[in-house]
Structures are given as C-alpha cells and as structure tokens.
Image (cartoon, rainbow, N blue to C red; front, side, top):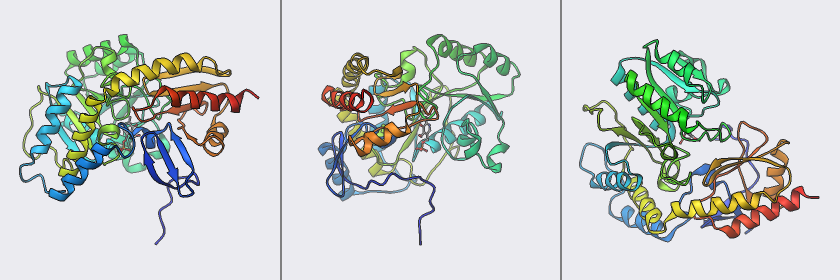
Length: 376
Ligand SMILES: Cc1ncc(COP(=O)(O)O)c(C=O)c1O
C-alpha cells in the first residue's frame, strides 16, 4: 500500500527533537520556528511531559466515556483556573476541526437554527461544518456546500448586524487571530460590538482559539486582549504538545443533555495526562510571561531587517510581511540556515509559531539569518 498523497512534502525527515530544536536523520539541527504548525507549546520532549505520559501509559491508557475518568475533571479545573474561564464547562474531543464541529452543532441545538456567520479568509478545519465555515472553496466538496454560511469581512460590524437582524443565525464563529488566513484580526471595538450584538440576539459567539489560544498570543486566549467573554471557545493544537486532543469550553448558561455530544476517544486517559502536564509546565515555567518578553524583543530586533513591510499578530503567533513572495526565502531558511518557518494564504507573509519556550538568543539567530539572506 502507498500513502494517499495529499501533502506536498519538504524533503526532511525529523527523527528527534528537544526544546526548540529538531534533528533530521543525518543529524542536521533545525531551529523550529513553526512548532509543527503551532502545536508545540512547552517545547519538544519536555522531561516532565514524557514522565507524565509514560507513567499514565503504564497505569491505563484508554477506557471509554461510559465510566468515570477523574483526569477529565482535573484537566477542566486546571484549564479553568489558568485561563480564567472557570465559568465554562469542558467537552473533550480529538482535534481542532472536531472542536469546531461540536461547537457549531451545539449552537445549532441551542438556537434551533442552521445559518452560520463566518469571516473572509477564515480557517476552521476540514470536517463537514468546520470546512463549510472555512473561506476556501478549494477544500469544500459538494457535500460540504449544503451548509448555510455567510462570509463577511472582518471589522465591518454593520454587515454583521444586518445579517443577525434576519433572525436565522445559529452562531457566529471567528478566530482570535487568523492563522492560515495570514494573521489578520478583529479590532477591540469590533470584538466588543460583536459580543454585544450576539448577546442581544441570543446568538452564540464561538471563538476559535485553536491556534491563537494556550498562551500563544501573550494572554491565555487571544480574545482576552479585547476584554470580551465568548459563549463558546474551541481549543486544540498547543493543548497537549502534539498528543491529539481538542476541547470546547461552553458557557455555563448552556445546559448539557445526555447524548447531545459524544466521542469514543475524546478525553481518554493518555490525552488528559498530556494536557494536564502541558498546563502544569506552562504555569511552572511562566511561559505566557516568556511569550511577552520574547515578543517585545522580536518587535525591537526585526526593525533592523530591511525589506520587512509589516509585523502582524501577537506574542509568538506572528506574521512577517515582505513586499515579495516568501516561498524562496522559506526554502533558503530551511535548507541553508536550518530554520523552520510557515506560510499562509498571504504569499508575502512568513509565519512564526515557535514553542512558547523560545528565548531571545533564537530570535537573534533568526534575525541574523534573515539579514544574511536579504541584505546582499
Ligand atoms: C484556527 C484553526 N481552527 C481549526 C483548525 C483545525 O484544526 P485540526 O487540524 O486539528 O483539525 C486549525 C488548524 O490549523 C486552525 O488553525
């Protein structure tokens, strides 16, 4: 059997990783400014994380959601405390798309409506409803186009109001900071007015924090930069440092009924152990504080790189925009300077999503590499 080839691959085979570095099979060391697509939060192969997962595996790795699993409550308590979202309830699943799928389904159960408002350039995943609310026709199959979705431009509250006044909307879904779309984000005024109009119309506001959450923006959630309180929050990526998991934080005002949502693997023992140890490490190592320190240093240092047009995003969820397409630059960064970075819909933007443990020294390495490649 061959693989179903859906990914265009760089010809690099990582075989080990530690902290913010990855090594390939010929022992070449790479600086990981991509975090496997914003997944590595506490750094690769963290000893405490390895210990928790190994110990859990030697006790019990999995049992179904038909019996008690106190690790789920421990995770919910810790997450509520660290994120200041204690008034939410947690549903656990296995990926980002699944988190959004369940959030949208829940909103539709609550409102008994089906139309969703989403935003231009959004990315919310590849399952049925999640891909339908993703602004990319190429990845929507005919079966996905059955969903009713209205895409609106970011930051145009009047258009949102007009749409909500039709009284047929089940939910509004928005990323804290757009990832795949190229690091655009709503303004504070927009987020606040959005929250207020959603409250007034009793339409759940879903904040997709799958990429922007878990400390990456310099606060636990990116929406916390705007002082709002969404009705539903979705999480995945950084949550368990690569162990597959997703979650939906649901406002206490919405009541659960048995069977409303469900999954076989979601919230299993191993996933919970991984997610608990990520939160412990984030707290012990004060990683959100580190994100802000390194971000401020980055903002200062990047000014010395000529040809940078703009820096977008926040914390360690950054986009460096140039006035040329960056595909060639990304290749040179990987193969000549041994630095992983990411791309986005915006072809002129270099995406930076490193582990939250990154230090100023690695910023220096990146800035020097950019200068060597661009200042000739
Ligand atoms: C904002 C956002 N939402 C949802 C997803 C989908 O997550 P997953 O790939 O885990 O299904 C992603 C993945 O990149 C994302 O960036």
